[in-house]
Image (cartoon, rainbow, N blue to C red; front, side, top):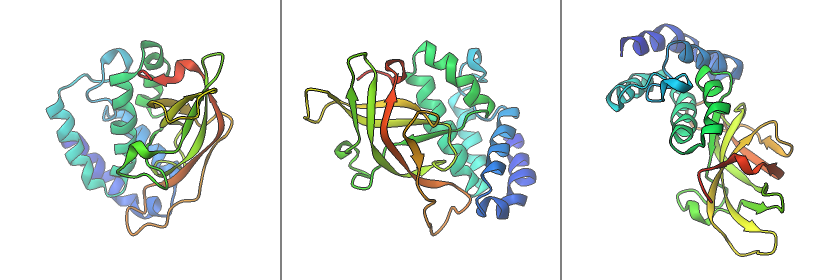
Length: 219
């Protein structure tokens, strides 16, 4: 707990004004600093670079980190909405490919569930994943209000799976989508009433081909 308190007091709170001016390079530096301090993988297995501690410790870290103003949204999206589902549902291959980079802060994560017409009612999402003959998927849709959306490298994206021959709504499923995939882009930063030091943007998916091995969990 003291480690987090010192980090927030000495390294985050003094630079809040820079974060609130959308200095995302600084956000990434602070995420890497959290990685050095072991704060990103408190309850992730040591095999992937985590600390494998208990939930009580994880809660204390989250509580102390919450004092860091809008940076707590940045780190929350990365550690709790990307690293946690990865550690729970990813395949062994996916864990080995992505978790070390996420835990080191080399890659930053974001979680794409909400859409312009579906917030709390997540299952009414319009984003579609069309299954291809080779087992891959093509994603089309727009996600809204995505924390870390402006600079994340890896997204957990929810979409309804449809086969090429079937236009009916299918199974609601998560995918691991890299920013480097063709057709992935971020919209403009939202004008918010608060949390100005946290990136919040739309994430747009235009004919994004996602390999079969980037399905998170099962269809």
